[in-house]
Length: 153
Image (tube, rainbow, N blue to C red; front, side, top):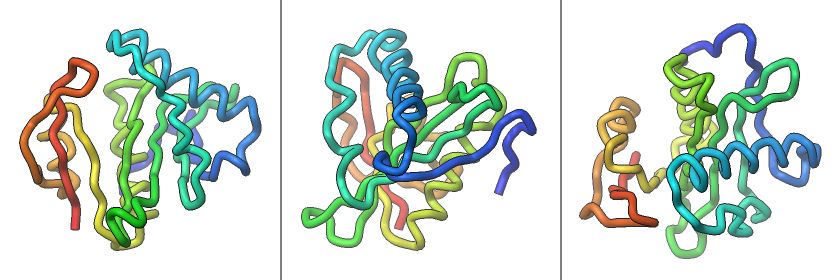
């Protein structure tokens, strides 16, 4: 597994076990990138963060600022035994430092050998493929951005 830059620490928890301030910072980063930067008006706080079995993984600076985050969800009963990884986001100041790769590896490890699905922004298909994900369906538009379903079995 890759290492985080020394200024960051890796954290993981269910929302109920996070401080309100930390989850606020995670949600704010998701809004900053997905809603504002990518110009997608959608409800990021979709209620799934509160589901049993969901896990937030994030890298934070000593100040508490969030450098990057991912979310793991349990996809049951629809995809029995399957986990999904989503809301993969890196703060603009931390892009290009390998932080998202560390978090994705931690998320894959946390899924403990279960099948994993994700809906990759299509321009990132090759990046996810480096971690073993393969495309498993046709490209589609979500909020005006091309996405590709991918799986890791």
